[in-house]
Length: 590
Image (tube, rainbow, N blue to C red):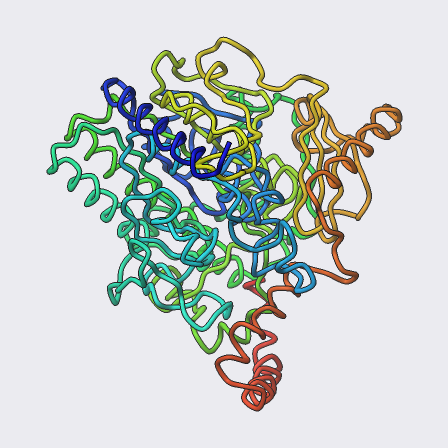
């Protein structure tokens, strides 16, 4: 068929589909709530002590997914969440800031969405949905990749990985010269100050009200990409005050408390074991001063999550007041596990930009860092955290609520994946999958599985026990097959060797099965190699570390453009002096 004829036929089919579907007033609205860097038990309904009543209410109204996996960093997850396509095939094989320069620009490693994928927003928009996004985008800032060209009617977004939560133009790390903000595809004029979670919900409610004023009968798709709880952790004082003294017993006690709570809720086996990670500090060895400092870090972390939940509550209240709540499907998830970096390498830059004094933490101009020890509690009872293929890095809380015919207060333990969300939403919205072509262009096919039958209790799984599901990010690797998981993680979380776990019985990855199942162990390694080949996964350069790549990319993208070669050398001298003067200061913030 001639391309022009195919394009015309596609346009006619889309118009007919939209016309037919618009007659179905029952098509639900869809709200996507994407948290940033939340661990598996940071949500109350998943065993945490942080107050998240609005997300908990959604969890009890719908389905909690306890074996749901994302990527271990933000942009790869978000790329799959939008497309239903593995991140190595959609262009985001790695987080741009952490990508080795040898990979950047190679197939699968564009650092942004490729032009051979279509987003779920585009598919919903073409079928008659109003589409809105506020908050973190992080899948490409090229004109063709901004939300207005990727299926969103209205948008106010941050193009890169994050920023300050009080001052939107303040960089949180020297990744680039400025923070990228866009509104409807053009550079945005941002307020001098805001609180990120409040602002994103305010703008979304504004979009919804405009749609209501237009008296449109179209359903809507609303995507909110929160910065909570990305560094710098910051929160309004009223929320911080709620948690004063809550964490006086330290991270090990909190990790155990959450393990027991998750087991009592039926989310994990009652005898789930835990590994004490080597990056976890000795609470009892800290001075009283350092214990107070570390408590404050976790108090702010909890407050930031609590504040985000409060803003979710404001959105829900608006939907109830407008009469849309009962016809709205909600999806909540975190983009990856808790942040476990200690940011030691970034300290010289932070000292020139922020305060880390205990009395200022949480507020404007202060930089909180949860660190690896509190991250171990956030992911309890799992091991590992952000950037790693251990369960703590990629198994995250996920909730779907409000589906017609869906069961309430259901716990789904089946293996599920972030690529499953787009086909689920499309089935809920009665929109067909696009196949291998869309609008006359060849595209990558959606590979995820619809979870609708699981939500309705019609099946116990969406994958067969022999169906492999591969994963790779920054050289950390995994392959799932049934209840088994093959994984390899670099230090300091891993040892660089392959291991085999039954993550249904042993989500804490405490018992290696490779000697008990040598044939399965060998076969799954072959399955992983097949995944690597089919998805164009590149080997990591010798000596690669994510933190090192961030530093190198920062030199190219921030330091050199900002100061030039001479200024860079002078800055390096100042940094060296600062390191010597501040070495003692870093002891209680690492």
